[in-house]
Length: 193
Ligand SMILES: Nc1ncnc2c1ncn2[C@@H]1O[C@H](COP(=O)(O)OP(=O)(O)OP(=O)(O)O)[C@@H](O)[C@H]1O
Ligand SMILES: [Mg+2]
Image (cartoon, rainbow, N blue to C red):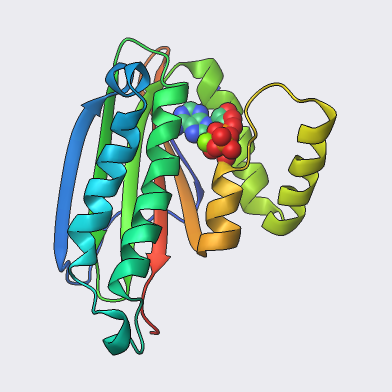
């Protein structure tokens, strides 16, 4: 049984440093589910929007380039937003994307609402990801997917960690007897500290 609030991994809440830019969008998970292109549309929007903070390739010495920023932001958000469309299962269909640009990193917070049961298995999965070697988990998962072909691949978060060098944090807030708000925070370093 979930306490009123629980965090798995590292979750940054009180940001003391200067925020260079912040933006957010609220949507409905069933809209996303109804037409999947809304997932990539919203992710691509933030990718393009934030890419303008980054220099062109030839000037990107200690930071990522504009193209790289656009692609990574879009890919990372796409994974997080897709999950809200797939797993939201309560009356509250709200999905919130919140993006913060800090001095050395980008913070993405994506939240949605699920019931107690889904929250429970998500907490277990989050703990498994945080407490194990992500590359090993990835290989295990691949093998498992070959054995039983059905179901979700379970590679989304592991791909973000392994290939996009993203750090993940998970927050679970009980809002009602059978309603839990889940927030996934992805942290992406874009500059050498
Ligand atoms: N926003 C969310 N709300 C509730 N449960 C979630 C959410 N995101 C992920 N989960 C749970 O965590 C599991 C792992 O998510 P992940 O994105 O890594 O893989 P997947 O969605 O199963 O497959 P893939 O992303 O490879 O298509 C999911 O199968 C689901 O059980
Ligand atoms: Mg996924």
